[in-house]
Image (cartoon, rainbow, N blue to C red):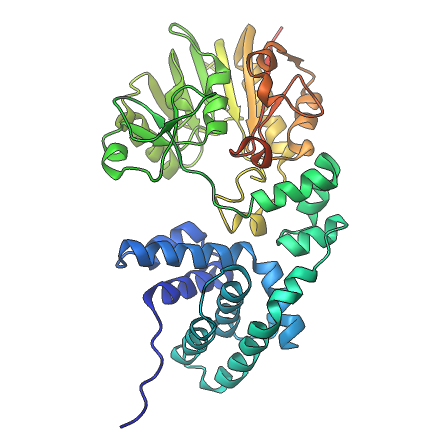
Length: 415
């Protein structure tokens, strides 16, 4: 009887599929995972997510280890070999308690199942070197400069440089570490009751073990970080206000707002998602408009309040989207255009809240400064625990300080 070939567990097979989809096809990690784990049980789904997301996040550090110990350029490897080595290296270097044979043998078997028998021996040899040497190699990586820290904690150099400049070495390294850890699960309680822990600062925010599918489907809760909810609260919309929300999808903030809300979204499919969110949460005061926020119909004017939660590099939510760090780029020109568009549609004496889910002075403070708008300093008095470390007239939540996503928030006045 021929010896039985090693069996690849469903979680590792799913994670392998996600890595191929993300790095070879340009797919988003969360969407690739959703299809890859559709038929798995809860335990295998959780393991597949941990393996896939961790391998995507740590890609730069893993590739350094593979090239150093395997003595082969990662870019020259066949895609299935590259994905299998990253998956195996992540288990060997970052997950305690994974048996060496499981990480090595199943990764090798993934290459065999991909039809690359000629690469099986090479993959096996590199993984065995990684099993022996990746721990000491990772431990020895320095972090005395922005470039060194970016390699050690697996970020693009430009992100390391930005955080080093804005937060200093200690703050930058603390943020890098925090953004490699899973985000805490927080929901906004829309109505009813929920099992969890009420946030001591943000009203309506609850920390939970997981999002209850029934509660979500029934519109009783909405997944939303404390920092994101802070943005909605900063608008301070009241009954009777006319409120403009630019870039409003998927609708978490728009459905927090009182008054008559016009929620603008450029993308048609995301606008439909926004409409569904408003319907599910019972926000019948929200009217969705598919349009470019920079070029609105002339009759949309005279708003009392506006919210510009602008597209950005997303450096404050990297632990929620594992592939974002490899796609991210600053968007200050677009942000300034949207902010100016909101100002033009707001009545004299009205307020504009500008927010971005990033930690980057070029996309936050610099944009507000370039607008020339007066800052409403009472916002920082309302939320003193979130005062910006350098510019106390603004708010800046920091994952390594506040335990939530990184958002910049400014409330501005149109005189």
